[in-house]
Length: 251
Image (cartoon, rainbow, N blue to C red; front, side, top):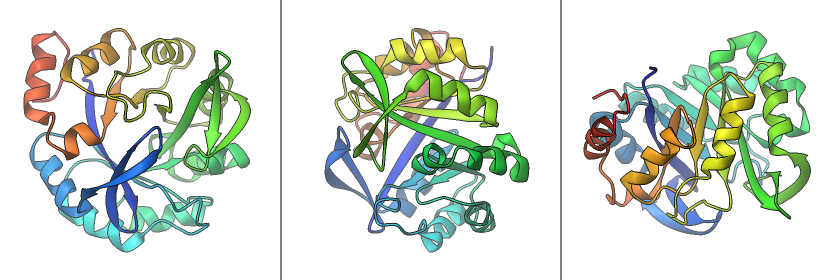
């Protein structure tokens, strides 16, 4: 059985880590460099850094902050926000990113997935998908969840795999920040229809939710923010808990 991964997420706005509920009501959660250092030292498997206002503000990701975080950690580091070209990714990789996460830009220009996979390898390309249920159907949303589309989550997931994405980071907007658990039915369906790893995001509130995401949702990794930022769950204890539930993790 493959090792399951625990991934803290740093949502960045104006150089600070923030966290909200259902993508709104953002609250300050601390200094991203300090948080990154703590997570790397306490057993996080990877770190995701999302400059959540870069696309909306039509600017590039904060390269200096990416560099500072990358200098501090020794675990795989994924960066997203405002990425729209091969050149953007080259700059991020030069500044210490190991992988990039694309979302709105991939929907607007699906060829970007192909281009990045060709230039840097599929292992470098994470396609993030933010979706919520509209009349019972999972629909993809863009620009930090602010712009709805008619694109079906599962159709888009299949397409990004075909185009060369190495992983999918699926965030349920309905579950985000609620601490009521991950969207496990949707996760399980995603895991059935694609053959690339699925990262679960949105809804972690307790240790059992991670167990459910791995067992019921069949996720390959689970990402969370506020429960880690505000010390509601500590990663070493979470991993011991998962191990007791026969989930293979790196201790």
